[in-house]
Image 1: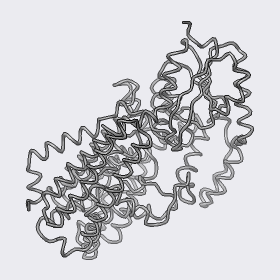
Image 2: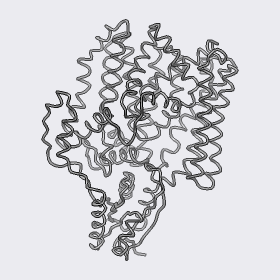
Image 3: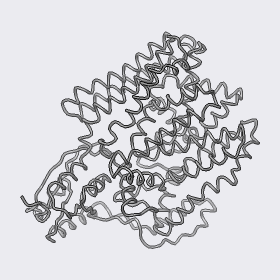
Image 4: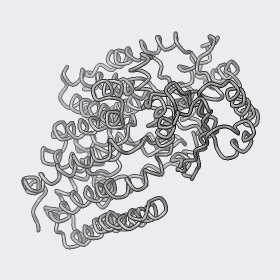
Length: 594
């Protein structure tokens, strides 16, 4: 039971079981789970629009104004659609590949920091950390961005130890790709690492060999070219991104996503399950080694500073903001496993280890209770019974690992955390998700119901106030036309901007200029009235329409839609976490003849 982690990695059966579970986790459910509103559904629409309508510069799709970002991730989705068809599997493939690239980069590129064995173990830890793993199953920008961030961080650290043109080119190429994926986060990571190394690294002169005064401007050239092209298409889009993704997040919050400094540290305990038990010991050890100015820990400290600590400062908070720090944390946890295997860290001598595993066991029990609650609340009869299986698996993983760690059976701990965590997560996707996603697939079932009942060429008009990007995606992939009852244009005339406040760092003045020239938001009461008037107008036209309403709207329009065929579909709004009923009213011209 005292085998060391390197010996464990030589166990072919264990590594084989890990690979099978890891691949199964990456792909199970990717083709059948419906789109998650809002972000994933918006990105699905962007990729489809780029592929079919060739809007390669400015992402366009209904209900997606807050989700528009730089286009590289959407280009990858469009390419995946071209290869595998427009479907959920193709949509999520870039995220899967992003996670694989991240783990491969840590496996191969992290060796110079703490050794080859620690790097390999860190790659397995990162691959089985449930937050990182599940990000690879959802079509968000974060998994692909993490790949670029990891490549850039490793190239920077290798370059500052042994300067070479290879590392310089890789660093700035990764920055260029990361900026074109999500804008500033990768610049914040690299910039923070530069500042930290400039202060603490004894060979700070080596930073000169990375040529940041040349590399960074060159890395921003692709972004600048794209912004210039986007400015010609839609000025408001460019200005909106600057406001929404930079100024708003630095000085304020979005959608109530806020928190004081320390929130990301607390989130690590949840997001690193099942490896949470080693987190406190790893950070304490890293701090001690950093104070001694040990090179590897100065380098990892720079990674944590740019990838984590800087993100504690803004009031706006999301778990993915500090995602770039997870590979560095995985390396530090891998070191703790090796120290524990050697007997340098034991249950009796290290209170941080005891506290960490007690937190892990408690969190696993809380997660298990949450899974049972979700299954009972959202699932059908079979799901309500079978959900106990993944719940027991995740709870047992934390409790059993703690018992093994108390006896210093490190090999058993690693096996339990690797295989137990992956097995529990796989069971969630096999048992729980099929039972609850039926409720979340309301928009998909709405589109299927309309396609089954309506003649070709029917136009689906969304009248509901709650806008879900998945609805137009599924409507259009079903071969129908989609229209918003009250259309919100993203474009418009040119905006006159005085850029002088930008150079004086008066950002709010610049924001006020832009806001004054934007279309005013229609009050909710007025918007509701316009929606109902639009339905009355279209229903009198005699054309083939399918109106997607809520119960209140249908009650107000009952007299105007008296001859319509009405279908009701129950579901859940994932983004609002509430039940809803979709009322679909089909005009006589839209209904297929018997």
